[in-house]
Length: 397
Image 1 (cartoon, rainbow, N blue to C red):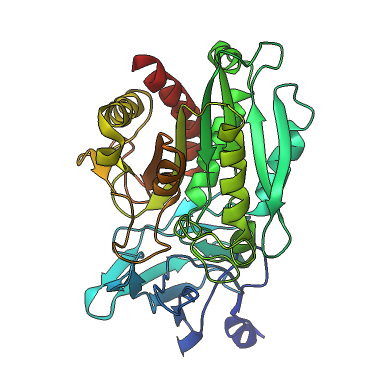
Image 2 (tube, rainbow, N blue to C red):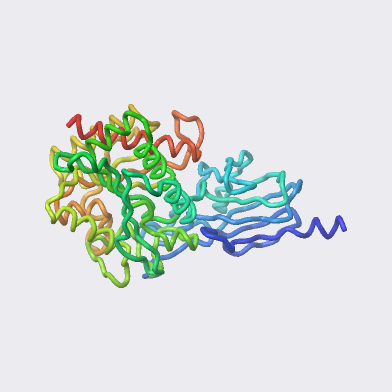
């Protein structure tokens, strides 16, 4: 019976957000797991940045897992890989508490990330970073349902028929006339789960009883798109919708049937400003491997645009663990000059209406102020600091 149990390790990816490629059995304690990855509608720009799977039958087994098939391309440049020697995976025994693996090895020759561990339970979940699914967002919104300062709207449907949500936070008892407007967007890329935890932290703070949160609700309108790609999140995708379109490109080539998510998000923003409402800052949240970063069409935006980006950087450093030694980055007006359909959301909104739109990259690797890669709690705390920093940046201009 013991021998049978030792051979009973199984791999599973049949749950929301899961992703796993081919599994090769090297021995009863050593497995090579391919990261499935995704390519775009042209069969290009393969990204293998997301894995999330469960192993059963692992209790007290000394195991080695190689994560392989990591190399793809980024913006048509081959050889890129988002899983590196410094991206530390997480594990959980209950999908609630996530911890970072301690025993890692990076095999440069084969571009392989090797994990060694002994499981403390029969089942273990393994992921690139702490997952955040549509179910998590639904749970949050159920908990916040009925809050007098929160309004929830569906502004469109994804390819798969899921709602594209827009949340509005403000104090309706205070007239909107003189309120500044901050528009936040999370999860344009499905793998970037850290942005959802930040958005949740922002929401929880804004709707809390904290005196500072009450002042923000009185003086600001916060518009939040908490889940730009619900289909990708559901299927364990990387950065493309169900039709293969990158939701943070194509803002200059929006096709409603092929990319209804971009169409709905863009139309909601343009309808808002075209009806003579203001947007004082639009900020889209993203994750990347290295340092934090603020970027956008800085030079095209002129002095006031750069001053806003600089103020945001300064306030983030005061109020959060934001770490950006290279400072503000000018993205220009397209990610791929000469090729239509490569504008990011901040580039597109600036080009369309001259909006003060920026992109905030948040690192998944170790952050100096923390001394470790960010946990769920760190992301939630960053979200609370983020909305305070954005508000302070607008006041400081």
